[in-house]
Image (tube, rainbow, N blue to C red; front, top):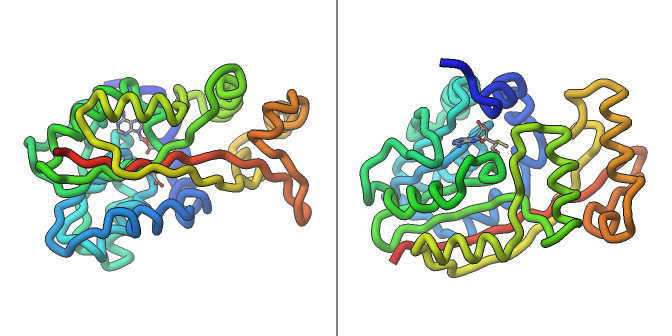
Length: 251
Ligand SMILES: C[S@@+](CC[C@H](N)C(=O)[O-])C[C@H]1O[C@@H](n2cnc3c(N)ncnc32)[C@H](O)[C@@H]1O
């Protein structure tokens, strides 16, 4: 079977996601633990686990974590890393977010962080989350969010230029509506900014492409500048992205 664009892209860059600071150390990791208060007997599912950071963070708090993804290189890496960290309750499995290979009412907690902007269908993903959660089960979701309108379109185009598998980050309103439509009840939401170090974020490219990406951050309207906040700081060129955090429950 030929690889999809997502599998190509993430297969090549899997190692980056194990060490990338916004993924490995991002503030939203511990925040999800605070917001969900995981219990020792919980069965958890992490969808689109990437470098596995949500799975490693929750593993000490629950009975079992399934770390799932569609990129085999990610799953191989997470299996090894979980062993290295002594996390014996982490299991890995191939799972497409829109067609989860688990029975209904299997999980107390489903997590998904910094990934839905790659999914073919977020509504299909949410329908699957609803199906595999036990009644009363919790979805803890984090994804990059953008403002509505042309500024949001610009931020998505900027992200897509670096990573063609970035389909579209949603607005907070789009998430609210999709969660309500899926039958999951949002019980908490917040936004968190994360600082991106340009040289790390763009490291996969040569000078020409880096120049283009940098120009997309600097030669912009004041409205875009206010959102991405490009800045030179301590010799580093940085900008910021916004994460939307949602905690939702199945009734
Ligand atoms: C940025 S990484 C995820 C980061 C990770 N969740 C974390 O918190 O560090 C995005 C991941 O989404 C996976 N992915 C993309 N589309 C997917 C889909 N439809 N179903 C499952 N995984 C998908 C990719 O293979 C990739 O590993």
